[in-house]
Image (cartoon, rainbow, N blue to C red; front, side):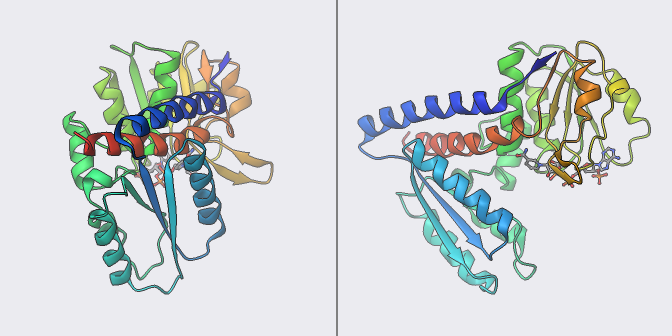
Length: 281
Ligand code: NAP
């Protein structure tokens, strides 16, 4: 079994992006800029945002974090987004989720101009992705896709099973695999026989949020398995795939931690740079 090393792949991607930022700076005399809006003081959100800022600085992006207290009014946030939409030094805008209950998530997502939507959540980007057009792609599925492609450059005709149909992971992942000519089955909590579906798959992407759901006798010998799950349990952080069992039975598997996670932030940087490049055309 080959362990797909997300840490290494993310470090390689960041090195490529750093080089690209240097070239863009030489060509345009400016660098892509990422602005993150952080509302409230949830510890995981603060850690994510700190990591995003650190990684953005490392590759040479201009990065800014705008912080608001939990009690901030929705209209203040929407006004700030409007201002950032017309700021030429800002290539990408990200509002860290989750938001306090009094702020309408969908309104916030739709307020970000699609050309600066580095999360790929705006309906325009969702539509473009599903139509096969150029778009910002949500960072986690993009990271999964890059890991799969690095391991298996041609996915033509492969059978893929995506476990989970969230807008964040499962649905965009399905679109990316379809674009690569996979035959894709998307599964969810009402799927009748998940084990039987998984047993058919050359590629499994599990994005469910249930610890160790995918078991060793659910997988084919030559399958590639990508584990998106991050679940806190008594024995520490585990994925949606039973690592010990599945690692004995497949061709390749991502670990948790150290698989998909590191690729997510690297893909945010990639999306920021791609937004910048599209804005220079
Ligand atoms: P989500 O929005 O809660 O969606 C979970 C999906 O799993 C839903 O579509 C649900 O089906 C499906 N599901 C639930 N129980 C199932 C079952 N027994 N069999 C098959 N499908 C089932 O979750 P998410 O935001 O996509 O996140 C999934 C996991 O990825 C979580 O552990 C999260 O922490 C992790 N995550 C990791 C990263 C990273 O960077 N590595 C980023 C984001 C999320 P229904 O639609 O029918 O309810």
